[in-house]
Amino acid sequence: MDAAIELEGVERRYGERVALAGVSVSVPEGATLAVLGGNGAGKTTLLRVLAGLLRPHGGSAHVLGAALPDERWKLPARVGYVGHEPLLYRELSGRENLRYHGDLHGVQHGRIQEVLEELEIAGRADEPVRDLSKGLVQRLANARAILHEPTLLLLDEPRANLDPAAAELVEPLIGRSSGRTRVLVSHDVSGALEESDVALGLKGGRPAPVDAELYR
Image 1 (tube, rainbow, N blue to C red):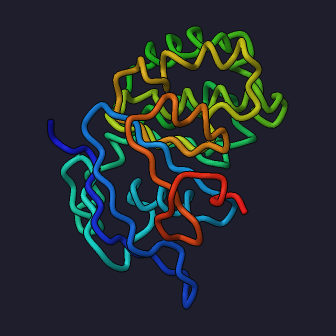
Image 2: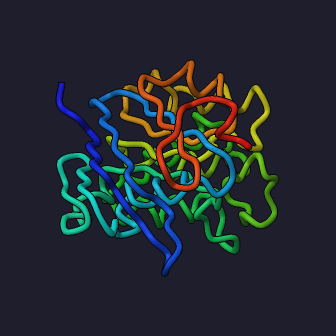
C-alpha cells in the first residue's frame, strides 16, 4: 500500500525557537495517524506543515504525493482541515460560509444542503455564525472540512464542544468509517489510540514515546 504521508527528519522553526525537529513517520493510504502530546508539543505545527500552510525548514515531507514545500499548491483541493479555530466568517451565515468554501473547489450547491442535513444544522444554517453555539459552530467546521470530499483529513480535536449525539452525527464524515486518510490530534490518548493505525508522540517538537510523560 502506498504512503499518503511520508516524513523524514522534518524540522520547523519560529525564529530561533524549534517547533519540530527530527519528525519521521509513514502513514499508509486510508490509515489514521494519532498525534499525541501536551500543550506546545508541536502538534498543531505539524498539522499546518502537512496542510502546506507552513514551510518545513528541514527534512523531507511528502503528502499525497506532493513534495513540500515546492508542490504545496497541489494540496488544498485534496485536504480537509479542522483546526483550533473554526475557519468560518462570523458575520456570514453557515450556509454562506459553506458556499464560499465550496465555490473555491467547484462544489455543487446541492452538496451543501446535503451536508447541512446530514449534520442536522440545516434549520440554523441561515443564521450568522456569531449567533450559534460552540457545538453548532464545531459541526459547521467539520462540514467545511469534508464539503469538497477531501482525500486527507487533518483533525485537531474535531469533536471538541460536541455532545455525544452531535459527535455521532459527524462520525461517518470524519471517523474511521469515512475511509479517508486521517491525522488526528487529540488529548484523549486512549480514544485516539483506539481509532488509529499509527501513533506519533511529540514533546518539545521532538518524537517521544506515547506514554504519560508526554503530558508532564
